[in-house]
Amino acid sequence: MNRVCFFILMSTLSLLCLAQGQSTQNNFNGLGIEFSAEYQDIYLFRGRVLDEEAGVNGSLTLGVGRISYNYYSHQQLGSSEESFAETNHSIEMTWLTGSAVQTTGYRFYDFDNGMPDTQELYYRIAYQSAWHPTFGTFLDIDSYSGYYFDLSLDRMIPLTRHSLTGLKLYIAGATGLTEDSDRLGQIYEYGYFGDDGVTNGYAKLYFRWYPTNRWTFEVSYRYYKAFDELLEQDPKTGTSLNMVSAKIRYVFP
Image (tube, rainbow, N blue to C red; front, side):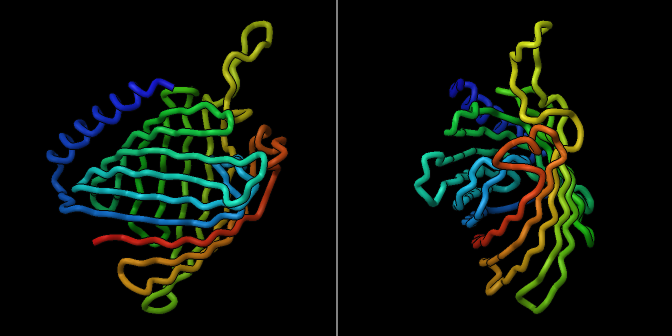
């Protein structure tokens, strides 16, 4: 992995985001800090099980105005021989356009289980409505070629002044993230999925409790379904699975 490329891209995107943020009409002011820690009994990355053991995902976000930096880490709780860990760094800009929240950014992935480290550019748009539709697209600019895209609907139902329940529906797909081979059939680029098109999805039920305006606690259940042949044949992933998680989140101010 070319670390110099990583730091150059981080610096360049920071300057570009700052310039764009100053020219838009809506302003985000001040400093923001967000921390979260989440327990998951299985760890998935874009529909593929990377860790069958329980683990903890930690995230720290620092924001100034429209610009934010995010550090994310997954660590296995157990001590199995196939332990897995992942960290990534993101820098992004967020802005409002009517009822839509748009985000564009850059992310660097660092994997430790033989998967190649990689980098991507991404864009996401979320609409503020009853079902909160969100669409995202991700372009790999390093170890792979092609796009990953997803669409989600999130319906929240208030229970009390400090709690709610919800249902999230998620579907994802890819194009160009398949294996490439030469005329003799020898693979020269290993893809993440077997085919282009819809790759995976899930339905998630969750409960959230807000004891204060800064703290959030969430427990959830997720039913996952694979649609891609490579995912279905993966011994860790398979055609479907169940997943539970518990998350705590703190936001300041």
